[in-house]
Length: 235
Ligand code: SF4
Image (cartoon, rainbow, N blue to C red; front, side):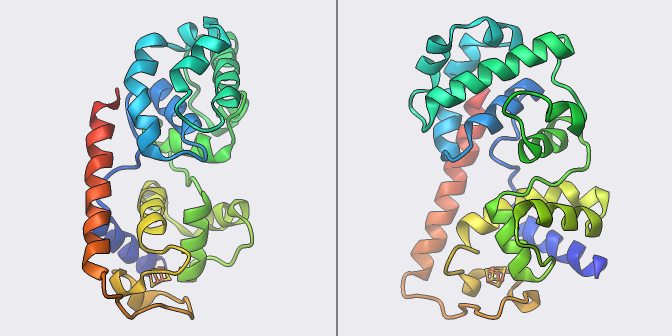
């Protein structure tokens, strides 16, 4: 079973070779990016990052900033008022509890205001090379469809995946399934373009390519190219 999972992860990594959209910069920039991206398109977050980090280059600067100034740097994205407040609280915690350094363990990361396990897992993997699996709605849906886990909630999926995926492969899980879930394993899945369709347990596969299949695939490539270009300029 483990070998099958690793082989599938390798196949998916070939299909989705780019890192996660918020795998950028130093741990502080990485954490801010993940917090800003909640329920917001990655493209929108990446676009505002250069201005944001020019204004608030360190946790200290962010902690000291008035909330309305933080708001003014992120008001192009959804829930910007709430996010501005959360960012200030998070930065204040980092300064007061951890001397201005982003902490490197799950326990300490989730003690920061507004930081949950999913956010902490992305930071652990991307910034500190520590095995963790960030399970969002995409990772949850796809791994359940594939038959890797049978879990009702993302939290249960994370628990199950942590047990069955070896440490050295944990980083890849979020990277490939977020993209796979966003582009191919969508609500009505595009199994006709899925490189692991033969090994997938999902019973309602959609294997018939639509007339505009080529245009769909071109659009996916275009979106990934744009995302990578934005990611490279973000910090
Ligand atoms: S075969 Fe279909 S349901 Fe299974 S992982 Fe691929 S896209 Fe998703």
